[in-house]
Image 1 (spheres, rainbow, N blue to C red):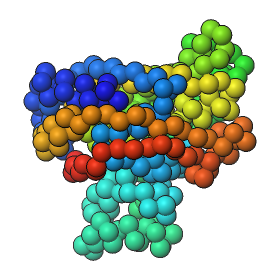
Image 2: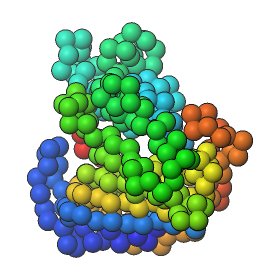
Image 3: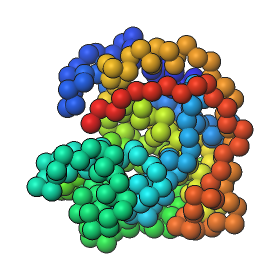
Image 4: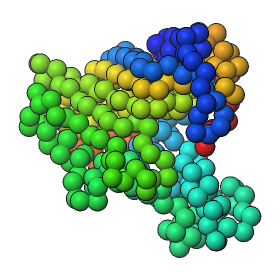
Length: 292
């Protein structure tokens, strides 16, 4: 994962300081690409402690087409909680609840969760029912990968201009394209990400789309080869500068290996227990505040 550390270093040394929507401020570069060979191991960052389970749970949530945080809350995955909470604070139902109290209500009150836990038509909605018109991009992709491997249209888009304003957070990872090798042996994926929180978000994104590539490769009869990450605005928040400097001084450790349940031949049949990681070792955890 030296590629990731090189990106962090490049942003700190060559980026421009810019204001941003959250008010935190960033140092940013426009246009950066990294490549990860999935045959060499699974690209879960080793220079800080990470956990595959929340990454996999979020991906399974996307694949389901779900857009309500209750699925994640019930599995103690916290990554999306702040955005619906900020909307809840603006509603007439808000009575001074803390974020923790809000999450408890999502967990224990189905009606509350239905009303206040929905994020709008974010990733899962676009992947499985684009523009709410019945287009299942994942089903079409799988059929195309199996039956028309050399197509240049193996694409899934999460960016839908007509619905962006209805989303709690417009998609950061906006478009992915897949590529089958000429010998029909390998599957690769390139992700275009319009905006990337390099310290907190990018390690999560790399692992998530690498995992999706491995899962698709298995169910479509290929082996995973490469994940290519192309970023538009690659930024480090100013309140992350010190922790990023700590991280880039750490030496990357050997990559772990992803183990999927080989009996699964349908993407929509994967469950969390079918996804395991072997041999993961890392440096200690590093913390940073999420800018919402």
